[in-house]
Amino acid sequence: MEKSLEPVVKELQDKFGVTFEEFRGEVQCAIKAEHIIDALTLVRDTHQFELLSAQTAVDYYPQTSPRFHVVYQLTSLSKNLSVQLRVPVSGDSPKLQTAANVFKSAVWRERELLDMFGIEFEGHPDPRRILMPDDTEGHPLRKDFPLGYEEPQFSFNFDEIDLRKPYAKE
Amino acid sequence: MTQLEEVTIDQYKHLVSERALTGETMLLNMGPQHPSTHGVLRLLLELDGEVVVNCIPDIGFLHTGIEKNMEAKTYQKAEVMTDRLDYMNTMGNNLSYVMTVEKLVDVDVPPRAQALRVILVELQRIASHLVWLGTSGLDLAAMSMFLFCFREREQILDIFELVSGQRMMTTYIRPGGVWRDVPVEFEKAVRDFIKIFPKRIDEYEKLLTKNPLFIDRMVDIGYLSKETALSYGVTGPNLRASGVNWDLRKKRPYLGIRPI
Image (cartoon, rainbow over all chains, first blue to last red; front, side):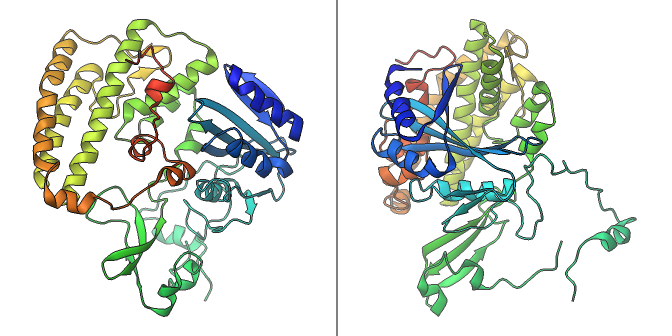
């Protein structure tokens, strides 16, 4: 770990009780869900981590608790440092506080997490699906969502496949 | 697929200003296909005359499920899909994927491969920026700009074809090095390109930089301040244009790049 990153991690450890791991020079800190907004605000204001480079999630199915890890990657441009915060989230109705008040880029990234993983964010200003059409059922990037293999609809089997499609009932 | 429902303004009530609800501004759909050809992107524009007051993008038309597909493949097979993520910057996508795999597996890359990677990635960067410049000129009806930039880009794509057999989706950079060594004509091709390109940039500047039409349509349009850019997570040339001194090649040099 670089010298200038140590006080940051130490302060996170003292205030929020994070545990951290280091792998090939990158530091990952595991933090609890109720502390994440305070941690992001602290890191942005006190330690000048101005950029939220990435906010994604990992699905550890079939492990059910915690099933998801929501990962926040923060970069400090003035000090040239990177740190990663991970929040373990359980599998049934995952909910977190929104980071939209801390970093504006979180608005679209949380929409993507809602769309792809089904993780809901409380207080989000615009909770809509972003990539998939609005009437999609399911969340594609979960590991138990099938990979696809939809049967292509040619003209000779058009009517059969049409019967199977879920159209709106009149 | 459900049947089409009528789109009313209620879905977007929280995103548009109050003037749209009274009808003072107009909500217009700039559909997925439009003459700007910047890929399929649907924009809902709230217009006050000709000024765009609010814009609600609707994305997802280019979403091809690459992430999900890559989860089901081996590391070498998944690399082919990284070419198609940002198809203007194929070598760059390959490079970021390959460097991640090398970091995971802890593999060293020989110096000649590193040098080849740097040359090709920077050429790819120039090609991508030429597309940006050409299509920006085309949007402003400076159509000769488009042809100039694509003429240079043809030369770069010829170099890529020389090296890997493919113009765009090269998959040339592989984990541990590159696919194979370059042929002998590579050096001459790259040196020829480097010799003529600065003069071509002078040509572009002669066409655009002091042009009053260009200045009128570009200056003070879409201003992004430093704090807004950082809060919205902007990186790359856009961040440098907002005044932040951050170039990843200088701050975190990779592949043996020695910043001057």
